[in-house]
Image (cartoon, rainbow, N blue to C red; front, side, top):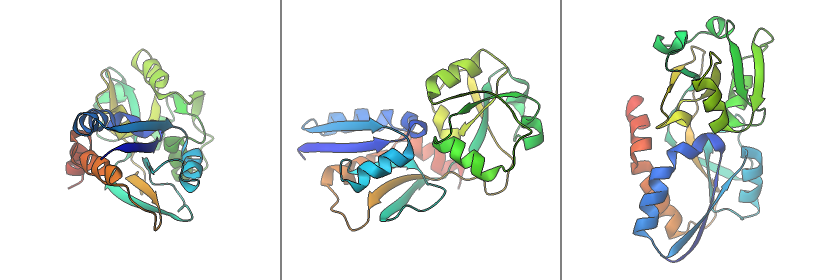
Length: 211
C-alpha cells in the first residue's frame, strides 16, 4: 500500500492508538499517516467532507446521519483518581460517593463529558471545580490532588499513578468504534489499520474484560 491515510481521533481515544501507529508505520513504510485530534462533532464534519478516511471515537449518544459505527471494544465511564485517593480501592463508585469530592471534568463537548451529562441528569449536586479540554493536564491534576475526574476507562491506558473505577450507573457503556461514511470506498490501508488496531494489546485487553 502507498498513499496517505487520514485518521480522525477524539482526545479520549488517543492513548489506545500509540501501539498501532508504531506497528503500522513499520509494516507500511510507504503510507503517510495524517492524524487529526479534535472533538467528535468536528471529526464527523471532516468525515462528511471526506477529509478523513475514518474516525476513531466512542459511539456518539445519538446516531450520526450517513455514518456507520463498527464496535471495536466495550468500555465504561469511570471515576479517575490518583493511586492514593480514598476511592482508589473501590470496585465501583456511586454518584453519592462522587458528590463528596471536588471534580475536575473534561470540557463540555468532549465525549466522556457528553456521556456523563447524558447519563446523569440533573446533577447540580456535583462540585465541579475545574473543566478543561486537555486530558494530559487533567491527569496531572488528578495525580497530585484529591480531585476526581470522569473519563472513559480506556483514556488512562498505560498511564501511571492514576486509577479508573467504573461508575455505578445504569447503561454505563462507552463503545469504542470505527466510524466510516456509509457506502464509501474503504482504502486497503484503512482496512489494515483497523485490523492492527483490533489486534492491538490496548484493544484486546478491553475486549477480554467484557467477555
